[in-house]
Length: 323
Picture (cartoon, rainbow, N blue to C red):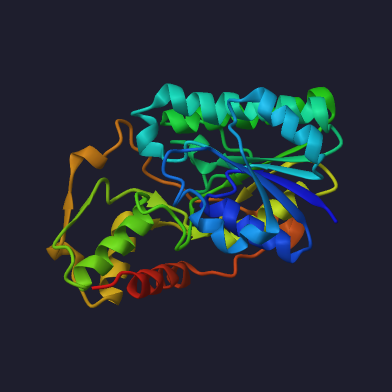
């Protein structure tokens, strides 16, 4: 039985990855950060709890990470934990850098010192590309990194230090450069679930308006289920390498909002207003990923279309928001 160790196991990706690995017969371990409201901090993995080994832990607690990895001796390590909200990274830039950059370094050091024969996956992000776009209108593994947020900057460090440890210490350390990926388990302060939940509340008469930021930014949205499959492929490749994970299609926030409201029989223009508080100090206008390397290497293709993803999220909130 293979063992996996997942940071951020109670997040969107962590929960789907846990499900996927359990179905493959893995023994799954993970860490969650303690907070004072424990009732909800494991809600995404509650239905899996009997099959998991979950401990309190933190990427900033090096001794704790080393102790856990030494005891578990995992075959695979997935670093999914992060301060994951790009807009909020402008409000807490130092904390974002500590967790997303130095936290990754801490875990790499624990990996190197306690279980160097394991395989390590770093959750890298399309936000690293920032304003860099290839001549073909896509971002790929060779596109220069030009981040536009503290989040993106911290992720660039984590990406590069993972590559550095791979080359310096001959570790099996890889990066998955994931473009935006969503699901019903996405936090409702992220724009896709914010729009879907807000639209459903308006449809059910529980709200009268929805406040958004930049509606003309474009994103490449996929489903988290498809992307955790890619993570597993990437970490188990015979050669440690870096791969973009993306659908190759881009939609604006405005298009996404129009689709969601239209599916509910509503005109978004009657309910949506722009609030400057949700704008970033430096906006990232366009992301569209070229995942041809991933597709060619592993024959990976996403099972979810953009419409199917949004429909699933709409159905979830229609069922779970009660009048």
